[in-house]
Amino acid sequence: MPAKPSPSLVILTGLLLWAFGSQLIAALSWGHDSYQMTEWLINYSGGFVRRGLPGWLIGICSDATGAQANHLVIGFSTLCYLLLAIWFLRRSTRTFPAMLVLSCIVMGFPAYQDSIVRKDCLGLLLLIGCLAVDRSRLPRPAIILALNLLAGVAILSHETFVFYALAGFVLFRSGTENPPTIIGFIRRSLVLLPAAGCFLLTVVFHGTPGQAEAVNDSWLPLWRIIDPGNPDLETPGAAIQALGWTSEHGLSLSLYLLTSGFYQPLAWAMVFAISFGLVILFTRADLRVRVTALLLAQLVFISPLFVLGVDYGRWLFLWVASTIILHTEHRSAPTWLEARVARLFEKANSPRIFELVPAKNWYLLFFGVPVCWNLFNFLTASPVSRHLHFIWSALR
Image (cartoon, rainbow, N blue to C red; front, side):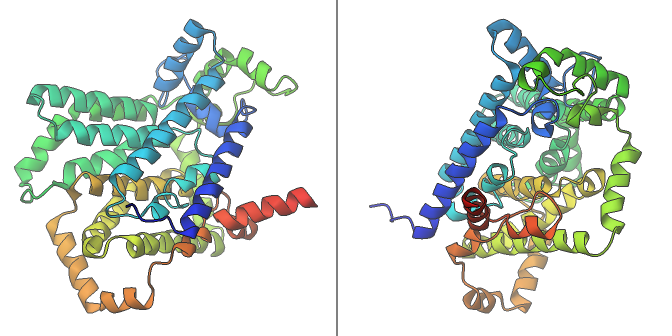
């Protein structure tokens, strides 16, 4: 007989469903000024640009079916989110409890921070696909072809896939295999040369202001349906406008945040540190060393994103979610890293620490990842505080 879910899990599930439904209703009005919607609708109207594959395909589907492109985006994003949540709950809960999977650190993040309508869940599903193909019994040429096809689609949808997926795919051990030799790493890298070529294309042809205008112009009829009173529809906005940004622009945003005082860097460092601690705390005891090593390695791989962009909450979600996926699919960090983590756990007397601070489900009801950087947003980011604030605002 299955164990009865804890009251905290029931509450968290209810709050997650509330946030999920609220976001989908709100998303119907997202258009020209929405980073979520415009990220999906970048296309190739002005020539090849990074992140343009989904928007190009959505445009084809919209023309063929007569459905509004934004409705297709919402529907497909919802499908990706649900498929990923189901996969986690079915495959990962032997190591990571459902409470962690549904928390703000994993599947709760897109729901509580208006990010379901983003490409993050699509990229994570494609990572799962790559790992499934790699361990399949297909002929080797078919595996190589399928791997590069899935990875190429992911990179042409959003280039961050390279950081949280491909690096670990090449460098992590599979199952109980011995550590790969240098030749083994080279072979793995060579197998993914076509995918690397896709990444190079996104770096070289990242987009220009002229291409951003062409993309925006292609969606003007849609913008006018969604937001007919907006006088700025003919000027590229949100993610489409960002196509024209240079690398210096992105770097300047990151450097400003990191050098604008102690509060913001310290606040985000605390969010990542607490998230790291909670993941380890809620991991099955006999697998904590392996998961910790994976988390540390994945953090190194995604670290360039902290300089290239300021969507730190999304980077945290991709970091934790990809680590859970890699572990569930029997990938392991290098043996030397696991050995060092094991020694650190031993020196720190970790069993005593985990005995003093046991994993209590209610911790995850009161921890959330902020979408902004002000103190109020930090205080209202958790599942409980977010909805209490919503109720208080409605009653006033």
